[in-house]
Length: 141
Image (tube, rainbow, N blue to C red; front, side):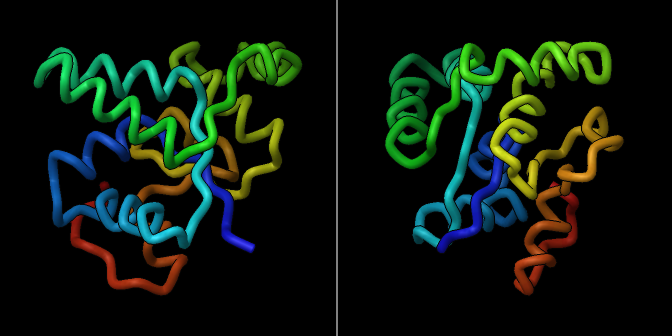
């Protein structure tokens, strides 16, 4: 059984922008079918928005297709209880991600975002690569 992980928006962006990054190594694991990736609808929308703003609509559409075809997308209505439970424990921009992780019992929330520091599931891309016994890049992302 594949390891199920949650990947936050910034990992997808860093993987694209920095091909030598730990984030890119994580996406390679996804592309090779070695991990199962869960994302929230918010991650889907944030990634699309980033690529539309800094690249173009076609690149944004390519990433949307990639995310939908390679990841499982969980919608906020499916994690309403957890959203309510964690609402005052984390910033709203990160609430949906945390709710998905908690709801599904996912062990790793891979992100480069200190707002997740207080949650045991949080792990940086570099730390995750090292957990997988792979050679990490020097940067944390």
